Length: 285
Length: 287
Image 1 (cartoon, rainbow over the protein chains, first blue to last red):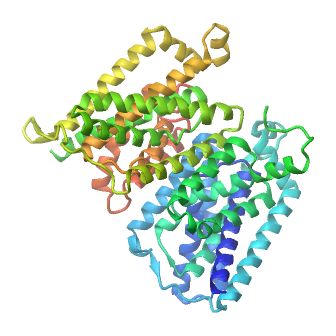
Image 2: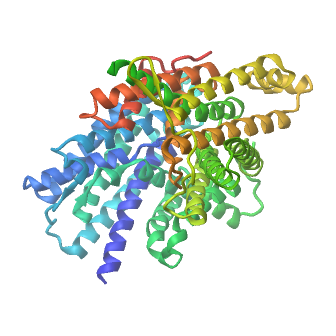
Image 3: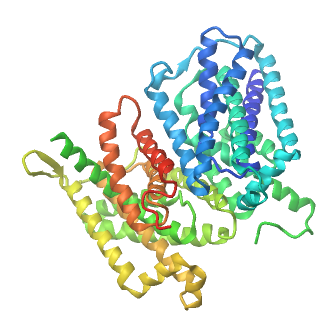
């Protein structure tokens, strides 16, 4: 039972993390190759505060705030560079994060931070809180999608210049997307730190950023249910893949490639095609 | 003296970066795809080079084999993976490329083993002393000279031959080029072949310098080369060249003077971000 509880908690954290990236990349169309850095900020903040004696729930808002603050800074960069340049800049952010954390003794350096205090909720209790937080993030995503802000995000993703012509304050909305998305990533990071009770810089590197991006893309960029299912699946895949052990990454990379090659809209597009086979396919323009 | 030594080290590293990044620029200029899997061809070239050298005993054979195999693999990759995705938004090809790269790294590990391979009789390991105290490996000198020669030949081909001019025309305006009778398909094949062959070449050089090839040797170049082409202004060949050398030197100095604060990758990316904030279009953009 312990194993299942741990697996479900991992799943909830991954889904939260993927949904937070979906806000930036899926809704607002700003590609990020460095999202793990923000989860890292949240995790490190929670870990340090926990060691200083703060209670679990009190660390959550601080983690979100710090991650969101860094997110706004990177968001400011996104105002200056676009598309491919932004992708590479965000990739730089994650390398900077790892590089800085590794060299700071306060942050545990190469060894990371171990012995993070218990959350005091019990394993099952923690799982429930994680699942609730995850559901809240999903609900927030669905809600945002329906608001005016969500529509503006969609417009920016589709055609930024047109939105400017419509006299919409594009920079402000982009910053909002970054602030929200990165704060939620910080939230998932706090859960991550409490769940594993050990964190190191390498838990929040480039590979992790790519993994979470692949969850979003795999699910269908912008689709909340798609991303939830994809993140849940891909986060437990390694555990189920013990059978093929050695070939795990080969299968993972292969799946990612095949999905993009044959269904660039991800699982959401596959499902749409399955349920409405007659409707013409979009995206092939 | 340390100053000169660091510059020299930086230039050696920069030459390797240049060979890898040039191929990437060729691809980017043509297709606007961030081709992460380029680094897989670099690793492939290194493996082929070591195997060929160990089998034949000749470094020339190793280079020819590595360039040919990497080049052909690159064209195959383009045909199977990228061509069908050209109409999609750019991140689709990017994710596909990342998937391809992850799978390729694993495939190398499964086929060739995790420990890596090395030359049974490593060539060009002698020391050369330049000036009073500058010490180089023969291989390091060859890397710099080799890169300079390759780039010279490439520049000549680009500006003085029909095919090269066709490539340039396609980069600047594909539709116009096509209406003048240039086969886009052919130009793309050629660019992928040449770019990938350069990556294969670079793979052999790195194998020579470290006397080791590993399945994961492509992971650092995969993102470093992306940073370089962005620094060089995406798609500009002279820009890429300059950015490679500059980054090599910045890293060499950075690891000495900022090593306490940041590691090598972080220095490279801190430099990149700083440049992009001042010049969002890259150091040497044409537009």
